[in-house]
Image 1: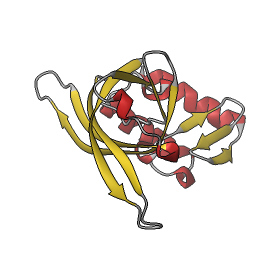
Image 2: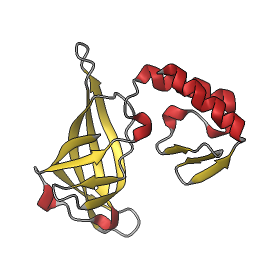
Image 3: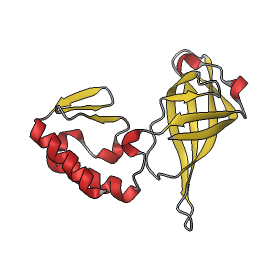
Length: 163
């Protein structure tokens, strides 16, 4: 699922490390999943990839009638890529398949199920990048954990039961 946004505003920042100037870009976008978004890459209209170094949600508002979520966010690009040429032009990101059709309520349910299996992984809703494989490998951000295949199979069965 693609979610579109436009970079609307540029902020100049000074690095605390070396005093260099770098840019962050402000934007907003609608979310229909009402889930946490992990944005590592933005794609332009030619499907060129732009790597995001820092992504921070500044504000999130949910329309009480439609339940649509409006997110205001700030982006910094890897190697301080100058994205001025993309201001006010459509960009998109791909929502993670893991969260694609989940509501907040379902994420909380999954979080509760996840905790039953092993607390060492922490709350699911606080994690940004999760990959769970049937072979028992679980990757969260850059860390990899290994579980027994039956434990992971049980977990997937419980997830399936939610839908």
